[in-house]
Amino acid sequence: MIEVVSSDRCVQCGLCVKVCPTNVFETREDGVPVIARQEDCQTCFICEAYCPVDALYVSPYAEQAVACDEEALAAAGALGSWRATIGWGRGRTTLAAIDTTPFIDRVLPPRPAVPERKSS
Image (cartoon, rainbow, N blue to C red; front, side, top):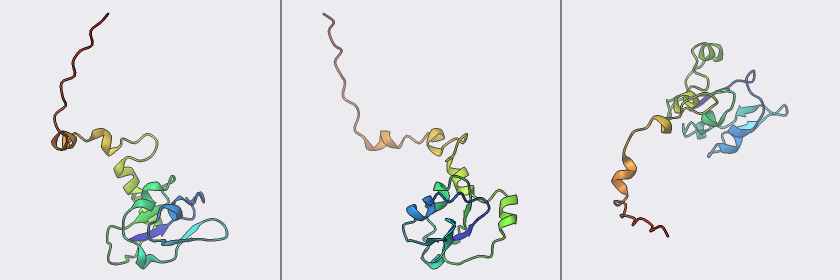
């Protein structure tokens, strides 16, 4: 569940507020989002993935809030760590780029042979 919004890192873009499917955040007058309804968080990580400055931390423990120290999370590289894991952000390799799963080949029918065009 969402645990930290770093007001030091936040650039007040509002993306986390916009993408949250359960309306967990509210925006303060200065533009920084705050966690207003933590119990509604579905631990979907969408807010953390969309944060362009890695100002959020979503704990993988969906059913319970856990005490988090922002400085310790930042030092450990945990702020925005899901975004880094999935490869979102400049200079990062996306999971899709390294995925070698032949999934599409298993679900699509074989490609029909396409006759070559005759040149005139």
